[in-house]
Length: 457
Image (cartoon, rainbow, N blue to C red):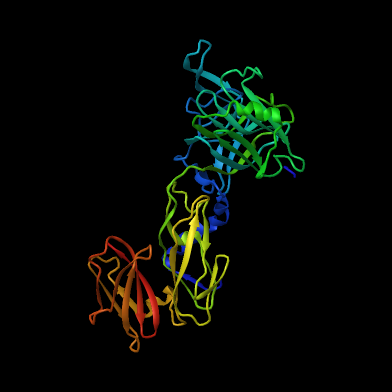
């Protein structure tokens, strides 16, 4: 071991929204981990730090030790795929809060030769599986770290990597009271990469933390510790809530920068994910978006076609979807193809799994219209709907003399059908009973099916 499609029609009001979500799905669904439930994650795929998830300092201040100052966001940037922590040699003098020689917590003026950045999770965790995909800087004088910290000086270093030895990951457990056997407050274990350094490409670092077990991982491979290390660590497994932290220090474990050190350099973080194996209610599929396809095509059933009630609100991240067989379509994985010349509504049984529990079976409705189905881009040529937005009534008419409207169906964004009735001779549809929001009108004519949308005020 080295550490070493065709033609798919989805109601167009959703197209830009859904395509944006699907663009993330190839990465976000990798968060699914069997036997673990995703409870917190950040894919760092936006352009700003999510302040509901992170702060950019310690709760007690912006400095603890070292030659660097953790700036107020100036050294943090997101490029749409990664969080990048910049370590630079721009000096500053600023006020900090720290403990003085008498043990009092007090502000004072301090000069710094370097700046760095950090993130500290707003949420704390007790037990679980924690992982992040990162690339660290190779620069003498730096110490990049991913760690968990809590009361009583409890600390789990998922890794610390010094800039001068970027092939050496130190994985350390810290505790408060002196161990009578080791005469120490910590137990460190070193793992070395044998192909490329941790600064040359991204690696996935993880730790499994249970009440009776601590196991470290690199690229999903368990780090096998010697018996003595396991024995010592088993005596000090933390039992407190801890927060996740990413830092890059200057002038600490790796000593001072030297003439070979170049600035700025970056600590790149692809994602952070936290899992739990707690017992909670299973997920529940409660609805879907409107979905249709042509009879000659193949449709891939995607997680974001479903509305799922999830205890941790992490859907679709960390969820796996299962599509089951049916009578009117062929199935390959999550891809369905209607049987030859099938024109109707498919009811496709699906369920999702959050890593631990399966959801209920939900029958996803997929409309398979005939060749006369007209796209929304053609609607305005001969269909008229007004007013839009509407309050009490909408008027629907068709310009074509040889086509008439037979039936009207009105759906909301979750696919719930509110109206199923023929259109009256005046072409007036009563929508007074609908609540405010976006609705879709499926129009059945003597020549085929059409779809309009309107806003209820």
